[in-house]
Image (cartoon, rainbow, N blue to C red; front, side):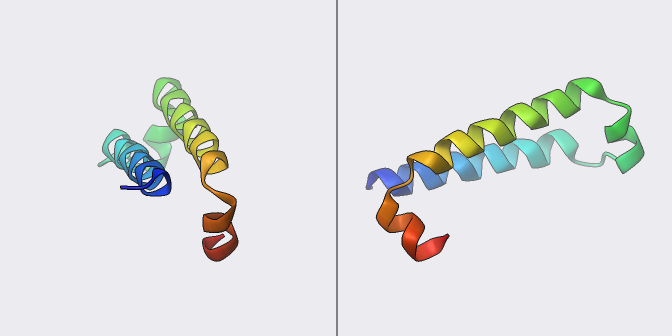
Length: 63
């Protein structure tokens, strides 16, 4: 597995965490749950950091 594939797996796992944290949660519940909001923001921040590590070649083809 090359480095880009590893990063994509990391991104997929982070997305799964977001889905798990918000599963069965209404928008109103999410808006009233600061802890979940902060957790999701953290996951999205990490996704952004991982995306920056993808190779230029990969980003030129897929982004």
